[in-house]
Amino acid sequence: MSMNYKSLIKTTTGDLVILGVKDTCKTTLLMHIARELRQDAKNHVYIMETFPKWIHEFDNIPYMTIKEQDVEPKENLAYLEENSSIIQWSKDYTILNANEVVQFLKTNKDGIFSIECEDMEKISAFMTFVIYQCYRKQYLRAKAETLERINENYWFMVEESHNLLDSTVIAKKTFNKLRKIQNEFRNLKMHMVCVALRLQDLSPKIRAKMSILLARVSLDDYQLKVRNLLRNSKFRNEITSLEKGKFVFPETDNVLETKPFQQIGKPFEWKPKPKPQKPQAKKGFWHDLKKWFKTPLGIKYVRNGKPIDTQQEDTTEQEFQENEDEEYEVEEFLDDKEFWE
Image 1 (cartoon, one colour):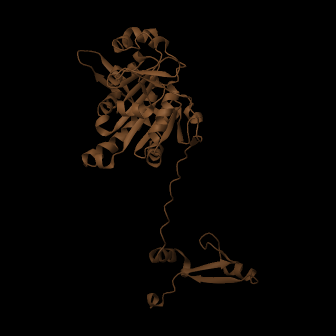
Image 2 (cartoon, rainbow, N blue to C red):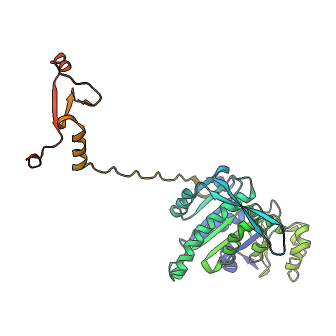
C-alpha cells in the first residue's frame, strides 16, 4: 500500500525520524510535510537548519539568522555523577538575542531559524531555548485547562539532526531539560520531525520515542538496527537498494513516494520592530517654578528670536547700550496674577 503526506502525519501523530543516506530526497520530503502542516491554521511550524538551503528553496516564510556570537557560554557547572569519584564540568549557554527570538516566535506563526554556529553544543543550546519557549506556553495552557480548547500544535522540523541531537552532546547534564521536554511532547501537542544520515548518531534517549521512516540506508545502520525493524517486512532485502524518492514506514509496512518540490514564493528575512520610545513627560507648574528661581528676576531675555542664557552671558547695561538697534522681547514664566498676589 502507498501513503501520502496527510496519512503519514495522521499515522505518526508525533515525533518522526526520516533516515537515509545522501541523495534520497529526505529534505524534499521534509519540505512537503512542512507545507502540508502549514495549511492548518492551528499548526505552528518552525524549521531548524544549519546549512542555508531552506531560506532559498522553501515557500514564502520568514526566517531569522542566528550568528555565532548570539550564543555564548554562560558558566562552567561542576557536578558529580553516580558511582563516580571524579568531578566533571558542564557548560551552560546564554542566548544574547533572546528578546528578538521571543519576538520572532510571537510575531510569526511559522518560521525558519538558520543557525550559523559551528559548535554543536551551541546549536543544541539554541534549539533547546526555542523549544522551551513553546513548552512553557503549552504547559501554562494545560495548567489553566485550556490546552484542548485552544488546540494549537507546535511542529519542529530539524534538518541535519545529527548536528543538533548528537548522542555525545545530548548525554551531557546541560541538556537534561531538552530530554525532559521531549518526554512530554505528545501530552502538550508538541512534535518533532528529524532528518538523519545515520541512526546511531542520534541520541538514543531522543530517537527511542520516535517513529522511523526509512529511505535507502547504509550497511552499518542496516546491520545494527534496520534489519531487526524490518524482520517481518517485505522490504527487508530491498531497503539497501531502494529507489530515490521512496520511503518505507515499518509500522504499517507501507511505501511513500515523494515528488520534486516546487517552490511557491520565497523566504524573506524577518527584522525585529524597533522599541517604541517613551513619550517625554510634560513639564508642569513646578518645573516652571524651579526654572524661575534659577533665572534672575524670573525673566528670560530673547534676542532676535533666540533665548539668552543669563547665567553664561554677562548681560550688563553697557552691552545693552551697544546693541540699542536690536529688538528684545520679554517672556515671563509665570503669568498667574493670583499666584503673585
